[in-house]
Structure formats: structure tokens, C-alpha cells
Length: 265
Image (cartoon, rainbow, N blue to C red; front, side, top):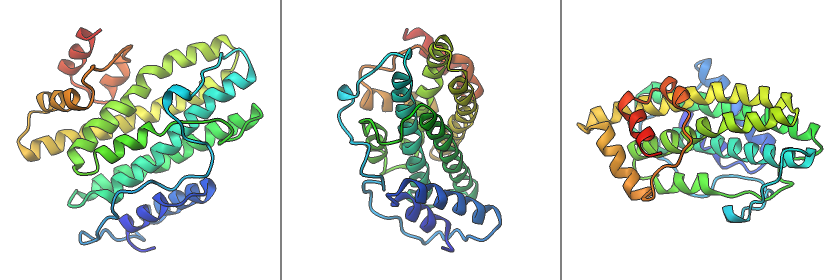
């Protein structure tokens, strides 16, 4: 492994969870130490399903059962859903590295860092799941996050608009409510883990906002009107609250965007 995007593609296609985590850590280490090149002529792999283990079984979102937080199994189910989001986020970040050519070096550094932090998040949540007597793969999950990755593979601008600014930003919105329920259930450890994840995810959404703004400027597009066009195409029913306006502001959403979200409630 001597080229960053090739290494990201390799890690993306690994099925085994622990081997994928190790590959991401090694890729990040080599990049930070200057051991990887960034070859602008490197050709990305055609879009394909990412590497993932045989379990969890992927089903439609409507088939993913919700359980109360009052039992260990209920909290384990919740943690499994969070772990699955983090596992998918690793693949999304790796694909952002390997998929798109002709971006500044800082872009690839940013998304490799995201992949590395998502791997850390996954390990935190999996550790808590094991404390609750469960393992990643014990419950069913859905593949909605990767579906958006496929829909945006043709344009880095669209990817930056719809993955970090919509899907990952949604995580900022829902986390406080989940933490409140976990606090009521007495699971302070899970709350503290979600504190770490929320802190880092604000940074990840900020990375998406930064590169979205950069690409709009490069192409002479107005960021907010173009974003609304994309929302009308991909989310015709609109975005639903509640919205974590403080976290979104920290992540770089403009005041006009925050007012737009508030007006939609």
C-alpha cells in the first residue's frame, strides 16, 4: 500500500469488521507519517457494495424493530443501530476518499480523518454492546446510508451536500433526545459515549459544509438555492425536525439555513 486512494479502496472492500478497522488505522498512520502518495491519475473503482460482514442481515427500515430503553436488551438494540450507523460511516468516508478525483490534498486528509474517527466510534459502541451482552450482527439493520452513497457517486458536490449536510447532520439532531432517554434509563456510560460521538460528528458535518461551500464557489453556484434544488429532488417531503440548531451552527450551517429549518417546523 503506497497510494492513499488505493488504500482507501482496499479498506472499503474489506468484509471482516476487525480487519477493516485495522486497515483504517494503518492507512491513517501511514498518511500522517508521509508514507502514502496521492496520485491524481489513480482511477477509482466502479461503485459497488462496500465490504461488510454477513451479519447484521439488512432489511427494509420498516422491519427494524424499536424497543424501549428500560431493559438491557432494548439498550443493546439501540447501541446496535448506532454501531451500524458508525460502520456505514466508515465506508462512506473511505468512499469519499477513493471516489473523487481532482480535489485538494486537504480534502483527502479530512475524509481519512473522518474514517478514522468513525472507526473509533464504532469500537466505543461495540464495547458497550458487549457490556450489555450483545455483539454487532445480533440484530437486523438497514442499508439506507449506503444507498445515498450510490445515488451521489457521480458528483462530489452532490455527495457533500446530501451525505454530511443531511444524513450526518440528522445525527446531530437526534442524539440529545436519545441521551435524555438513556439518562432516564440510568445508562450513563452510553450517554458519555454519545457525548464523544456528538462532539466529533459536529466536526464531520463541518468538513462537509466546508467542502460543499468550496465546490459551490468553484462552480459559481449559490449554496443555499442549489441545496434546496437537491432537497426537492431527493427529499420531496422535506426535512423533519427536531433540529439541533446549536450543533448545526457549530458545524457551519449559515443563519439563513437555520432560519429555513425553523420555518419548516
